[in-house]
Length: 99
Ligand SMILES: [Zn+2]
Image (cartoon, rainbow, N blue to C red; front, top):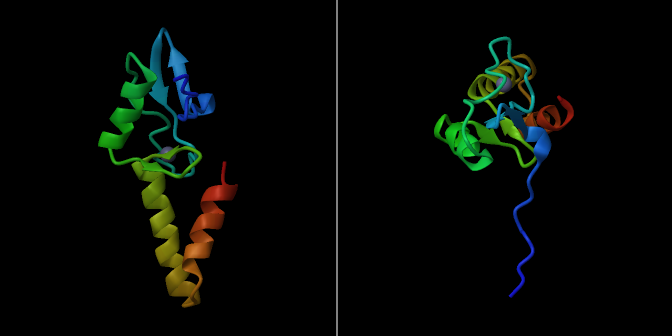
């Protein structure tokens, strides 16, 4: 069986340097954003590394824990200042539009 690759590799998520790979943070919104994960020998290892560090996969890319905290912090602020529903929508919009 000739199986087409189901795994879509998104090259933009991976930084390559000296034959080492690192996953780059998708959003980089936090002041203390980690920017990228540790450099590993393969893309797979690089992704495993960020998984171990509890980075969040948004569907399009990885979001480092610092940026995730940043988003969560914003959510809490929004909730306090607005006291409205629809917070989930806000979060999705935030992640999709911030690059
Ligand atoms: Zn980040």
